[in-house]
Length: 89
Image (cartoon, rainbow, N blue to C red):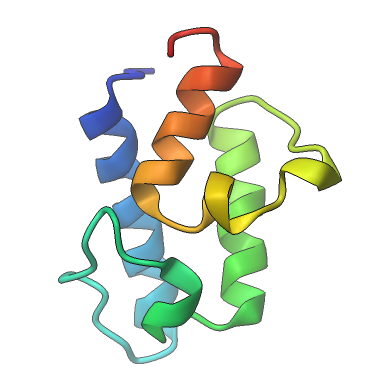
């Protein structure tokens, strides 16, 4: 798996777009620094699905204290979080 920030962001965006499509939303214009929960593209169940996918895709378990907007609120924050957890940042 490519752990370059841009690749991680692309993978996350693809997942957000898939989840949003099921809700009849087009998240294609979501920016990497835009707050995912505030975007309106996915609902709370979609956020949970995104986090579950994120953990599985990047082979990590997110401890409850890390479930924050600072770590997981944007695609960029999520990419940074993965890289920190993998010792790359």
